Image 1 (cartoon, rainbow, N blue to C red):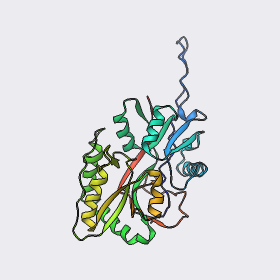
Image 2: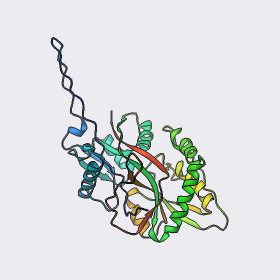
Image 3: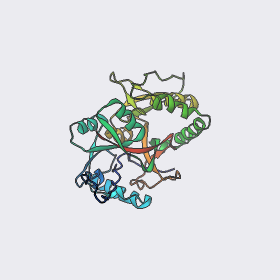
Image 4: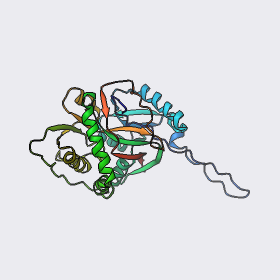
Length: 291
């Protein structure tokens, strides 16, 4: 079981270098294409604030990943600007304060579907992302129980069904807010949700968590005989919420995996205190930019 004390969502999203075409004899010259985003020095890339990772640490980690995966776009010149929440990052893109931002593919698809002035770029860059749950290390037995339930949900098709109903088929529509089931006499675990990973993790305008997070936790609770209480915190405040005991579980942390599903190093692996579950969903990565 890999351990970390951090969320590493902020992976650099770079455009693939544009090919250069040669002009044939007597053919009209075409204007040279504008440099791709990955070729522009000083390009500003938005990312959700990682826990315990500053910009220099981020650059060191992306350099390590580029060496492991053989994908040099991670080390192209750029400046990462961290945000505490998704809404602030979206507003910064609209205001042209950043050139694009990094996000998992399913999240990017949902955001683009709700914003006509946005587009997806950099689809399917390596490495692959895996969504997991995180708890304090002292709760490892609970994590093992969650792991068994996640595997059972994967084996019987429940996970695929929940993803299809609450993410894939949603488009840009708001998910439905449904209450979590309550099991009489069962213990309650507080889970941090952010609204910063729509449609995986959505909080509606009225403050109600909705969509996949509710559907997944409702099913998980039945299988492990636990009640879940959802606690809304920003992505940047989740580490403090877990460390202080405000919550028992972080609903999502992002790990990185190679094309064969092997876990890649985290920059905070040497820090102890947090245990993470097996991934309950895998995803690729994209950038989101203005059209």
